[in-house]
Image (cartoon, rainbow, N blue to C red; front, side, top):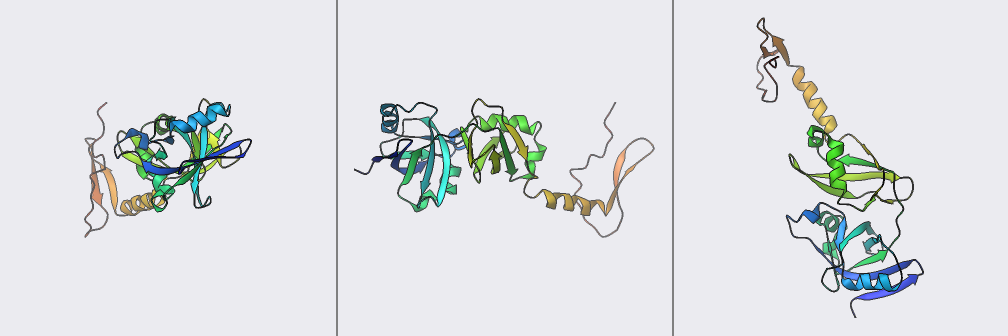
Amino acid sequence: MFFDFFRRNRDMYSWKLSPKTFEKGNKNNYGGKVLLPQLVLEDLVTSQILPPYTFEISHNDGVFLTHCGVLEFTSHHETITVPEWMYQQLCMDETLQVVIKYKFISVGTFVKLLPHSVNFLEIESPKIELEKCLRNYQVLTQGDEILCDFEEFGDIRFTVTSVGPAGDAIYIVDTDLSVDFQPPIGYAEKLENERTVMKYVEIVESENGIKYVKMKKLGLCLDFGEIETKTPKK
């Protein structure tokens, strides 16, 4: 039988399942929860394993590995449905089946994230918005590249660079989680570009309070669309 349940030891149970992703546009792609077959739940209940149910998912003898929570036990028999980012990260298109292991994951208190876009800095109250996104995740694993959807800027990916207090994965539901950020990818280049532009321009204010851009050197063609040229009315 393709669906293979077996006991490794008293605390670990495993299933082999065929992976597939949620459809594009499905909101579950912005989270870390999967769909599993009903038989998995039956095995857990029979073995008197209590929720929350968290799992290790891997293939190729653990070369590709992460952790996940469960959304529902409604997946088709012998399949697991995962978010698109997880499918890509674990290169599931290169395998016919993945190994799912029940795994107890300790509650975490800290996570550091690396945003993949400088647009993240433009979000008003970024921590609050990210906290809303993290509600779709039960666990975070160091090295994961999770995906969040922000109303103003759309998809932004984040690398989980570290978790605490210990281990490589943490459970983040109903806990006081401290979230820290590294400078986004492309941030240094953005600063350098801004410094380069300001070498050649200056903001001049006229007697009537109107601000305008003045070229320091001739022969340049610059786009000043992002520069505010008028003083806000009081």
